[in-house]
Image (cartoon, rainbow, N blue to C red; front, side, top):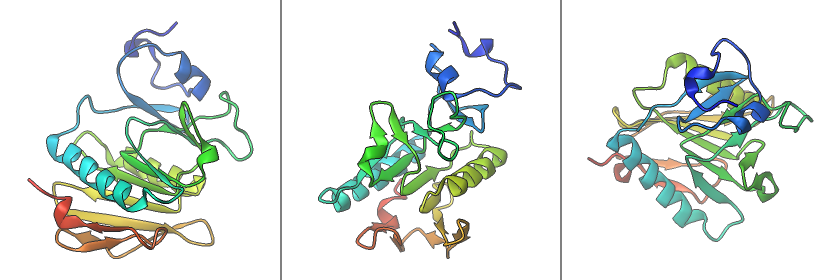
Length: 196
């Protein structure tokens, strides 16, 4: 039984079945089987952005079939047509995700790609980690992906095209309105996200 993060071999690949057996408090994610330890506690600026964006999305989508889930919330991204816990090697906790196909939601989180994923950068997230997340969100079919930079007051937006590749959109900055392409009625006033 694994009761301490230090017992894990960070050079080894793991599955969601392994992840379920671990009994310790550290938060982590699996990306293609490899462990990424999450920052112990995000900054107040990070958490303010999470709460502000989550609140705006919830308010605007509350009468739709879609649901917003802030972290911690496991998103399990299985290999194509292989949904067993032993086959799942990517388990992420995006800062915010929106799921419209509620058959994907269970007591453990979301099994399959959310419609919208929002990652809010914090100093603990490495470029390598963010590149790998970009790739797995793209491969799994996340329709819209936002990367929020709270320290710089801007958001990078990526939309999945018909070929299954993310296409970058014009970045949005503090003071501008961010319109979702996947949810036409969803508008985020960035001046209400990047507050001190």
